[in-house]
Image 1 (cartoon, rainbow, N blue to C red):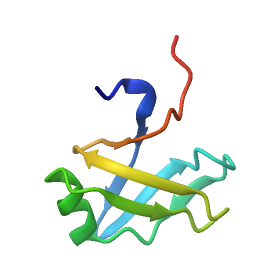
Image 2: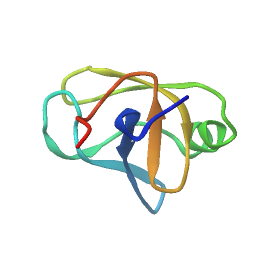
Image 3: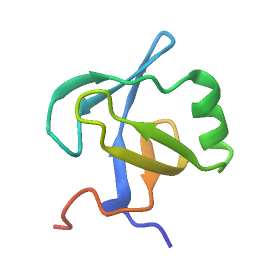
Length: 79
């Protein structure tokens, strides 16, 4: 079962997908190379790989919704 600790928010502007902050190096406003097609596949539950352009960290995205990537690793601390 996936938990909220395994999520990371993203934003879509026009055809570009941004992360407000990289979960690995904490760089802000990261423009990814994640395509619209990859996002749609992730929304269908097809696993996708996102390599961060800032630090080359790798996110394995198990699924996506309209606000979050759901990954196979813990990206944030529980509160």
